[in-house]
Structure formats: C-alpha cells, structure tokens
Image 1 (cartoon, rainbow, N blue to C red):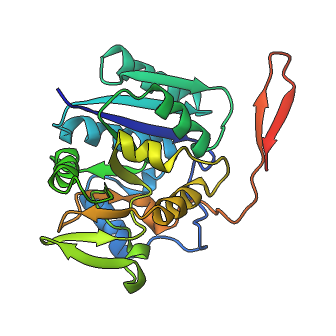
Image 2 (image 1 turned 90 degrees about the vertical axis):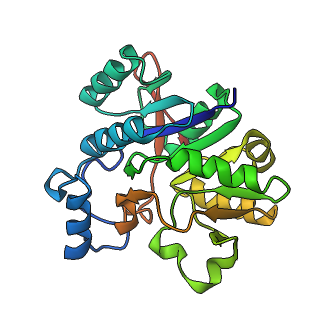
Image 3 (image 1 turned 180 degrees about the vertical axis):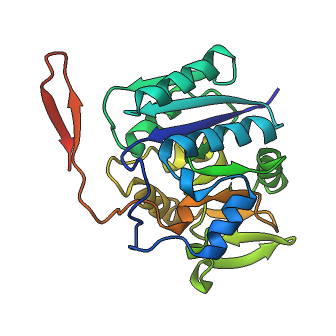
Length: 255
C-alpha cells in the first residue's frame, strides 16, 4: 500500500506574530476569514497555531500517512502536547531538539526518518480541508511523465503573472508556490535534494527546484488556509543558530 510521509517542523523562533515580515499586520478581512475557519487572532501564537494545524490535519487527512514532527527547540508545554499525540498514536515519529536549529535543519531531520512513497512537507500554521492530501497525490499520479510537485494552495505573493503557467486540465500550475505545503514523490525529493541551513532555506530549495525544471500543480480551488501568508516573522533580521553541548557550551553553527 502506498502512503505519504508528512513532515512538520514546529519552530519557536517567533512565538508571537507581533512583527510580520513586511512590517504590517493582517487586514480586517483576513482576520475575519481566519476567525471563520476557527482561529481567533487574539490566540495568534506559535503554540496555538501548532494545535490548530495538527487538529485539522488529523481530522481531514484521509490518505494513508505517517506523521513526523520535529519539535525544534519549542516550549516545554508544546513538547508535552506533542508527546500526548505520540502516545495516542497520532504522531508516528517525534524528534525533539534542545535548541532551535532553524526549519531547514529540522526538515532534513524529518527527511532522514521518512519511509513513504510520497514526501509531504508542511509548516506549523496551516488549516487543512478534507481530502487535501489525496487530491495532491492524485495530481502527481495523473501526470507521471511531467516534472511536478503538488500543493493544495497558492499564497497571494505567488499569484503574480510571472509565476503563473498554463493550466493542466483546469488545474493551476505555478513556477514557485508550495514552500509552506507541498507533496512530491521520493524520486523528486532525492533529485532536488535537502534544504540548506539558514532563514531562507525554502527560497534556495525552490530556486534549485526551478533550475531542474520542476513546477507546482495546484487544484482549481485552494484546500488549506495558511496564516503565514500575512507575513510571518521578519526574515530580514539576521539569525544566529547555536547548538548547546553537554557542558552548556554553545557552538555557533551558522549565521
């Protein structure tokens, strides 16, 4: 039986979304849309986003999967929550890093544990609709001879004309979307390779994806709600990443 490996990194670098990437906050319409989907902006923290994501994923994912979660230097309460899901059998594999090693590092840890026919990489701030993963897998199986990755939605910044490619049978095709939620075959993942370390690891990975001739296929209608499209934390701020040793010495890995 075919199944997917879903990899999610829970990072706590920005535990509250006080400052967004571009320095602005969500519009009233965006806030209303999120509230309608079950998420109130007054609860807009990484800890609550984590629960919002996993609860919707578990409820709405019908295609067989293993769930690999990397607790990347998160809060102790978040770790307790994740351990509870592990004990209930809702998480297949849980990796807990003492330090926040950045999401590229965490994604690579998850990839090392993945055993599925398909690899699905998601962020920790997404609400999923029913059959989202099944739909993404079916899109890949429908066009096996094309170099495609699938995604259940397109973020507003990738709706610019320069990213839009000709449709395939009514399904949208995009040259650059999917960094926050994407599905691909193991062969595709091996071809594109692992993620670089650093705050823009996803950007570098997608550039390599494009250079290799891959594009992203998306169903006609979005099947997830992603809070991060309102900005996320400020990626322009330089970030240093440390690993703490047994004697509490901190070793800087990169900046």
